[in-house]
Image (cartoon, rainbow, N blue to C red; front, side, top):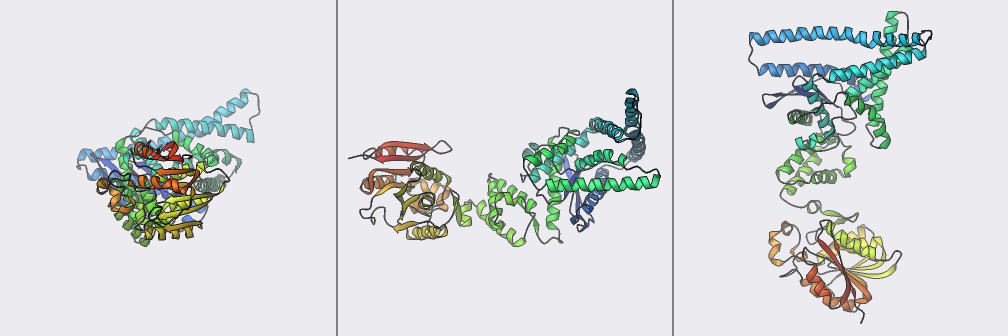
Length: 576
C-alpha cells in the first residue's frame, strides 16, 4: 500500500469491512467460512484531491460506510439464519437496547467528560485558595482532566467487545502488511504489529484531544453562535491533523517514526490479541476489495498491489518461495528500483501483459537474468546472450578476493581473465582499479557480448578469442583469474541451469577438473615472478585443485562463500 492509497478498514458485527475508492467490501466469519459481499458506493474522488476539504470528506465517507458495513454484516448473518419469531424478537430487542444504550452513553459521556472535569478543576482551585475564573490556566487544567478521563474511558471500553477488537486488530495487521508490501498470507500477517500510522481512529482521537484544549478558548455567550464557532474550529483542527498525517505518511525516517508514536499509543488503548480466524477474515475481505478495484471498468490501469499479491500466490503454488522474484519482475517492467516500486499505485495493461509473460517463463524454471537478458554483477549491469553464463553472486566473492589483493593505488598491473564469458570479471576489475585487463574466451559470440558490455560501461578491456593461452604468445601477467567450467559431464543434465546456460560454459570434463589442469599447467609460462592465480571452485573441489596447484604454486589459500562452501582458491607462483 503506497502513500497515496485511499483505503480504510473497520471491524463490524462478526466481521470486517474495507472502503477502497468506489467499493465497500464486507466480510463475515460465519459458520467456519468467510462470507463476503461487495457494494458499489458513490464517493466523488475529485473532492478528495483538495487539501483540508478532503479531511472532512474522508471522515464523512468513513463514518457513512462504517455504518453501512455494520448493517450489511448483520444482513449477511440474517440471510444464513432461519427466520423465526424468536430471532425477530431478539433483533428488535437488540435494536431497542442499542438505542437506549446510545442515549445513556451520551448522557453519561456529558457527565464524565464535561461536568466531572469541571468539578475536579474547580475543587482544586478552591482548595488552593485561587479565585476560580475562566482563565487560560483554568482551561488548560480542565482540559487536561477531560483528556485523562477520555483516555481512561476509552481503555475501559476496550476491555469489552472482545470480538470487535479481535477483528479490528486483524484489520490493522492486514493493512500494515499491505502497506509494507508483504504477502497477504496468514502467517505473514500474524507477525505484523496490530497498529499502523494512517489509522482513522488515531486521526479522530487526536483531533478530539486538540479540540478539548482549543474549543474553550473560543467562547460566545450566544448558544447558536457558540455552536457555529466550535463546529468550524473542530473542522479546521480535523483538517489540519489529517493533512499532517497525509504529509508524514509519505516518509519513513527517525523523525517521522518519533512523531508517529502518539498515533500508536492511541491504538494501544484498544489493543486486543487477535486470532487466526479474524486474520483470515481480514485478509480475504481485503483481497476482495482490491480485486474489485482492479476490475473496475472506470479505471484503465490495474491495481499494482493486487497484481503483486496475485503473482506472489502463483509463484508460491509453483514452489518459487523467494518473493523478491516478484519485485524484480515488476521493477524490470516498470524500470524502477524496489524502493520506488512501493510508491507506484497502478500498472498499465501493456506493462501487466509483459509482467505475466515474464512470470510464465519464471514458473517454468527460467532464471530471471535469462528472462530479462541482463544481470547485475558487483553493482554493474551486464547484457547476456545465449552463449554467456549468467553471472552469479558467488563469482562476486572471486572478484572481491582479487580486488583485496591488488594494492590500493596500484597501477599498471597486467590482469588476465580466462574464460571471460560476459566479461563481468574483467570489466569489474577494470572499473575498480587502474590495471591493464585482458579477457579471453574460446566462444566468439561470448567475446562479442563482452565487448558490448565493455562499451556500455566505458571499461578499457582487451577481449580476445582464444582457446585458453593459444593466441597470447609469450605475454606475461601479474594476475590470472578464472571462473572456468567445473561441472562434471555426467551431472550437467541433472541440473536446472543446463536448460538455460551454455553447456560449453558448464562442462568441466569427467571429474570437472579439466580446465583447472589445463590452465594451471600453462599458467607459469604467462605469469611474472610472484604472480598470482585465482579460481572459482565447485563444491568439494578445493582439495583436488590444491593438489594440482602445489607443483608450481605455493601460499595456497581459500575463501568460503556465504553458505560455508569452499568457493575461491588462490596461490602464488613459486620462485625458481
